[in-house]
Structure formats: structure tokens, C-alpha cells
Image (cartoon, rainbow, N blue to C red; front, side, top):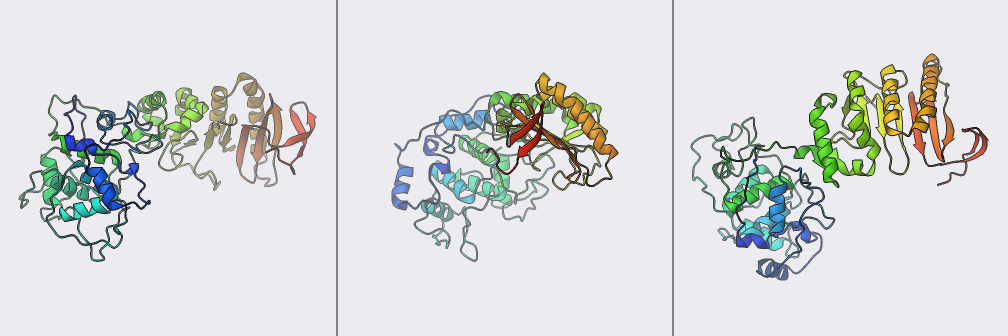
Length: 447
């Protein structure tokens, strides 16, 4: 999406000062609609402004726009101090924002929605938008308040609410996926000419797609302040906001963005980082900082942990690799730096490259004493398992103790993986032999 950050910002309108993010109110709580409407329309209605959101770091592409709106009392975010920029905005919340930002003139009679009773916390705002012609009543008279707002609906809402130049008839196609007879064509043309959005780089607008809270905020900001299309003098900023989510540390966010930009070849996909997980688990961040050269030399790659993000749990794979283990499907090595213990490394013992990477990352993430003891044990146990790989009953798992930590280490042939887990003790040792425990009280876990 082509959105550029301006070097300076035009002051928001006086009406916009009454605007707050819809989460100031609980959408489930029933309140007196008349009282709520009066509060929203009173010029002395105030909110506690929050200077920054912990999930919108200074590295965020739209930090200045969001922060500007926060400082002017336009949005306030959630009670936990987050803005949730990547969360999709719902129809009811989009309606409330538009209603608070401007006085809408009724153009059609109101028809009661079946799912928006008079007791609904946003009844009056939704009613106002319907009477202004922004929302319509479907055949079942439903509004679907929690359904995602689409980009087409956004175009209509902003074009009408902010009195943009809406053509009576569209005479040329603006976007290749918006034919001139499209129901939102005139509104989309209006916001395109006003410079609110320029669409996607492939020449599409994608009217049926939902949009995030941050993009809705940016579109509204541009519409409220009459910011036109960018000129050659506008600051061009690369959009890296999709790389970061759930942030608790600006510094870590900056580091992860820099790491990704310098090492894109070792990532399977461009996905966001869950920054708070790295804040809680610095061992994983250290792996990203110091362990990628070894990864690259082995022609291995890091893939998203959850299908949508890179977390402190680091998954390593190779193109075309298939791991038969259901729990670690298509994962050659798995690293996690727990907060309550020292973490774990699981890998496919049959792959020598996975063992080599495990040894390299062991030296990065663990103290020297642990490395000196565990490194030869990993090599010995992995080789022993490879020799006995056809014996389904083979197992060389054991528990050892180093400096008060309990280490589960070895190969469980049934799981077909090597496990090294350094953790707080879970079982009482009944018989020790050096660092090895020969007998445990498995019947009574310590936790």
C-alpha cells in the first residue's frame, strides 16, 4: 500500500478533538444511549492522552501520524497501553470514529437494525451513519457490528463524512479491479483523487479486503486534514511496520528490523516478529544476533514459528526437508530460550547439519561450563542414535545436573529427535553418580 509520511502535519480540526478510539467504552456494556450521545457531543468531553503505545515503537512507519492523533486526543487506544495496529477494525468501531469526527447530516429515514437494539452502546453512532447514507440495511436488517470493515466501505464512509468530491458518474476506471459500475467506484475515485490512498502497487484497490486499525487511522487522518497526494519533496519511508508486532521494546524492534534487512536470505518468508517474546527471552535474540552465519553456511533457513510470525522459538528447516515427527513437522532444529529456565534445543539427530548448528548455537546461548559438558554429550549421543537408528526401542535419554539445573539430554527413538532441555529441577534425584542421576522420584514432581 503506498502511504508516505509527511515531514509536517496539518493541525487536526476542532471537531476531531472529541474523537477517541472506540475501546474507551466496553461494547458489551449497556449504557443509556442518550447520555452517551450527549457526552460524545459535548465539547468539554476529555480523555487521558497517552503519548505513546507500547506496540507502536518509534521505528513504526506510521508512528508520527498515530502519535500526532494521540497527542491531540483523537485516539486513545486500549486500557493495557496498546493500539493493536495490525488488528482489523470492526464496522462498529469504524462507525464510532466517523461519528465522533464530524457532524453528519441525515439524508434517509432510519431503519432499526435487528442486531443493534437501542441499548447497544454504539446505537446512536451507527444510526447516525445509516441516516447519512454511509451504511445500508441488508435484506435481514442486520448491521453485523463486529464484522471487519472492508476497504470499499471505508472509502464510502470517508468520502461522505468528510465531504469529498464524489462524482455522480464514474467515466474512467481508476483501479483495474474496480469497474466503473462497481457500487463503491465513485467513493473510491473520491478518496483516490483526495490522496487518501493510492491503492496497491499492482494497480488494485481490493475493496472486499478488511483493513487494519493503523491504516484506518492513517486514512482518516488524511481525510480530516485534507492531506493531498505526496509530492516529490515528501519524505519517502520504507514500510517496515509489517515486520513488528506486540512490541514492548523500541530497541529490540530496531535490532530485529536491522537483522532481517541484513539477513533476508536466511528467512523463508517476510513475517512479523513478536518483539515482547524476545524481550522476555534474550537468548533467542542473541541467536539472531550471532548465530545466522553458521545457519547460512549450512544452507539452512529460519521459518515462521506460528505460520504468521517469528517468535523467540526459532524453527530451522531446509528447502524440501520433511521431518516425519508430527510435533516438529518439516522442522530440522527447534530452539527456544525460556524465561524460567535456560531453554532447549531439539533437532533431527539423523541430519549432521542439524547437529552442527545445535553445537554452534549451544556455544552462543549457554555458559561455557554448560557447553564444555553438554557439547561432547550431544555428539556422543547423536552418533550412538544414528548407529542404532533401526532399533525402535533404542533410547539414551538421561537427566544430569549442572549448577542446580536439571538437563534432559539424549535421543528418544520413538520421537525420532534429539532433546536437550536445561530447566529448573522437575524431579527429586534419589541416587546421584557425579552429575548423573541414576534414580528419580518420578511419582512426585517438584512442581
